[in-house]
Image (tube, rainbow, N blue to C red):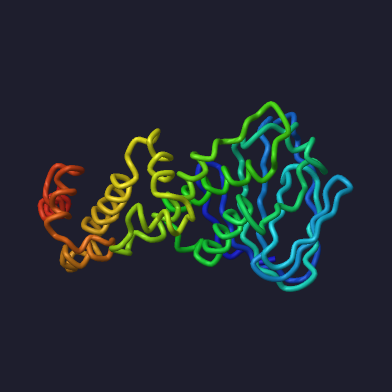
Length: 277
């Protein structure tokens, strides 16, 4: 097995793996020594993987998603060359009892033909080839979205209510925004069409957030611009080219948003950080 790339954020990990045929067995960790537990979501981009845990066995082919405990004993059999996207959630996503009650101490296939499972599948598929290029912020958004979607996918039977639909929508919308910031036409209307929800529903989902939907899009664009403006390797790139890269071709709007969020103009911001301390 060759691990291509891995991003670790707050103890969780997002990993792209290329596997050759073979079998891997993991022994149970000392659960008394570490009360936390890890849940793993495994997406098969291509190939076939068979997972066995606690007497339960599932087969995952291209496009399939499996969910299981990674700190209980399990066996993974790769029947042919495969590419996987694996998210390991080290922090609490539910209770161990939720998974135990589901079947096979959590080992299960996540239906992905429609609904939450389809969104989870699309999320993992779209990011699986880009894991090595993700910055920490994007990796955090991907992992957060997967966490919410996985909780829904495991269907806890009682005791621990899953995040509500609006929270899941916000997490998915943030991920979609992250991937489309360079599109100057990105706005709430376009985002709603991409997510197959109404604009009103999307705005309502952001009502409990720190920023409105439109303000969040603007904020993310300015943050990307600001990061590029202080990047030493981009000092010769005109401000207009940098802002256009992040969907802000209107220089007057760029200047207004920059002053609102950073307290100065883009040129002043760049000059301040370019000056020796």
